[in-house]
Image 1: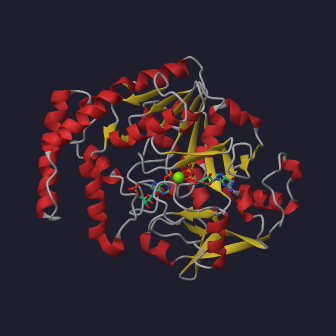
Image 2: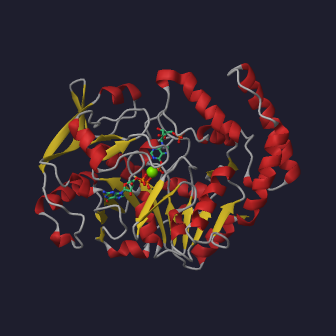
Image 3: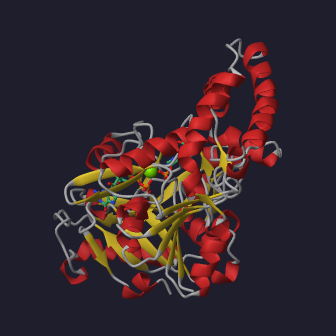
Length: 432
Ligand code: GDP
Ligand code: IMO
Ligand code: MG
């Protein structure tokens, strides 16, 4: 039952899409377990750039099977757009993509509530992707959500849509002074979409557990990152799901003992999109340099990403919660031209030194990073194929990160392209 979970170790956009696509050549099933189309996963190969939001990045490997698990929130309109995108690249989705009948659906009122809620928050906004993710998960937890299986059943969908729309229209009209959404129009439009999605909907828990029983290789792809986790991230500046390894069990319906490997994906520096604390953020020319060289603009919203130095407290916190058995270090090439590279090894707070990531929101706003300086390597690394060819200073930087996080680097990524990668631990391709 080889099973590998891929998790973001920072605030998302660590390069999960690239690594999932790379490892999916060794997988039988590739599964998403949380989030929705707030994710933007970039895959680059043969000169083409693909950005996926809902469908697992494994879909770009012909013949592999992909699952959208119960923990994912699915916007049916966005899903159709993405299915058409995949088909436009001459790749099939039928009999390759399976969507859990237990996943919850995102409807237009969720998107509206997300945007209007953010506007109301003003300066205190979260900086969401406005894809309706928070409101969809809120409905799920409040036990009024609409699941894929409800959506597939005409009468149930009509009744649930009617009840939900009534409540949402009351808020739209009375609180936000907006126009009502029409039940009949929405129902008619979404019935057409339901017909197109129906062939993909099934009980994915049977499928994934059977695959594990048969010893198939299962690769599990998270969206977002540990610091955006609803419980362990920088609350309230987080997403509304659990993008951690534990979330794979609840988001797919697999028992914890099935998971054998947990690969933490982290950038050689740090980025974050949206609001919220970011102790090592650089609001200077070095931050601008990282943004430009790293192409740090959101794959979903196009927003410039905030950039900063590698924060060992963040990745150690992520390792503790996820149980990383290895790291994939991405974007080391972005640091190629720098004279000096800094790593945050602790925080100063009111005269004290903190060695672990604090949870208190006031503390997080006030902490001052303590840095260790490392010399740069001033050499282009993107074309390198062997660890032994790396400049000594790049190796020293990697070793320092391994030491501070307490986990070995299994994969080193030195460019956007699938082939700009060095696999350091071949066991990772066996998922066990
Ligand atoms: P994800 O959300 O974790 O899948 O990451 P995104 O796709 O949102 O953002 C990562 C960005 O970095 C994408 O533009 C990737 O093409 C790019 N990328 C991934 N790995 C590397 C790398 O090692 N070097 C460089 N220069 N770019 C990379
Ligand atoms: P991938 O999978 C980076 C951030 C948003 C915002 C917060 C809440 O590509 O790594 P939401 O729309 O989820 O309610 O927004 O979470 N966010 C991401 N940041 N990468 C992502 O996904 C993200 N998905 C959500 O910017 O700060
Ligand atoms: Mg992304």
